Length: 170
Image (cartoon, rainbow, N blue to C red):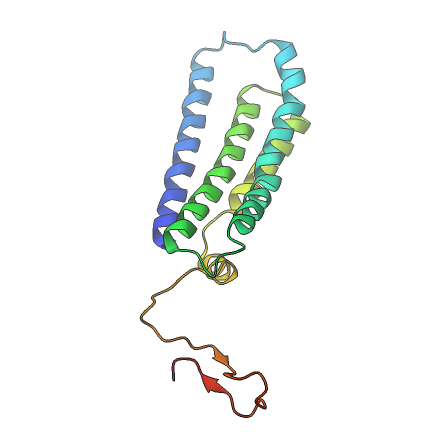
C-alpha cells in the first residue's frame, strides 16, 4: 500500500510541477501576456488564504470527517483506508496548485512566498511515509489479514486477577 501511495504522490507532484514549468515557460516565451493589476492585488490574499486552507486546515478537516464517519465501526477496510490516504494526498497537491497560481499571477511577494511556503508544508505533511501509514492504520483500526491470530493480550473475565492473562484465540 505504501508503494502505491508513493506512486500516486509522485505522479500528482510531477503533474503539478510539469504544469507549472509549462505555464512558466509559456509566460517567458510570450512576454506580452500580463495580468490586470486588480487581479494581482486582490488575488494575493485570496490565493494565500486558499493555499493555507488546503495545506493546513484541509488535511485536518478531512481526517476529522473520516474519523467521525468511522467512529461506530470496529475497524475499516484496507480499501477505504487507501482511498482516505489518496484523497489526503490530493488535498495537499491542490494547495500546491494554488501556490503555483499565485506565482504565475505575480501576486505581491509577501502573499506569493507565504503561499509557496504553506504549500510546501502541506505537501510535506501528506507524504505517505511508512511510519505515518503504520500510525494511521493503528489509529483508524484498519483490518489486517483476518486469518492471523491476534497478539493482543486480554482478560477473559474482568474479575480475574491480572496474573491470569490469556492470549486471545487460545
